[in-house]
Length: 195
Image (cartoon, rainbow, N blue to C red):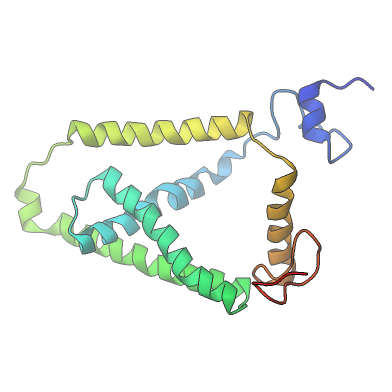
C-alpha cells in the first residue's frame, strides 16, 4: 500500500485512514464552538486582567488587561495547583476551586469595568484609541492566527510527548493528579525517590 508521507504520519498510530484524513490536514473545524473560544480565550482573561490592572493601578488598555489576565490565570493555577498535587487531592477538586476563583476574579473585573464606564468623570472624557492600543490589538489577533496555523501545519510530536498523554489520560481516568509514573505505569509513592 503506497501512502503519501503526510498521510502516513497522521495515521501511524491509528493504522486506518478515516474519511477526514488527508495530506493537507486533519478533521474539519467545528465553527459552532467559536463563541466559547472567544469567551474563554479573549473575554474572560481581559476581564480578569481589568481587575488585576485596577488592583495594581496600571493603565487599563486592551493589551495590558489581556496580558495581565492571562498571567493572573497562570499564577492562580500555580498557587493552588502545586499544593494540591503535593497533598494528592483529586483533579475534580482542583477544577472546582480553580473555576470558582477565576469566576470570582472575572465577575470582579466586570463589576469594576461597569463602574468605570458609568463613572460621570469617564463619561465626560473624550477618549480616543491610541495607536499603541490598536497595534497591540492587531498584534494579538495576528499572533492567535499565526499560532493556529502553525499548530495545524507544523505540530511537533515525538516519543517524549507520550509522557504527557499518559499523565492526561491517567488524571481523567483516576481523578488524581500525577500519581502514576508514565515511564513504568507504577504508582508514585515518593516524590523524591523512584525505584
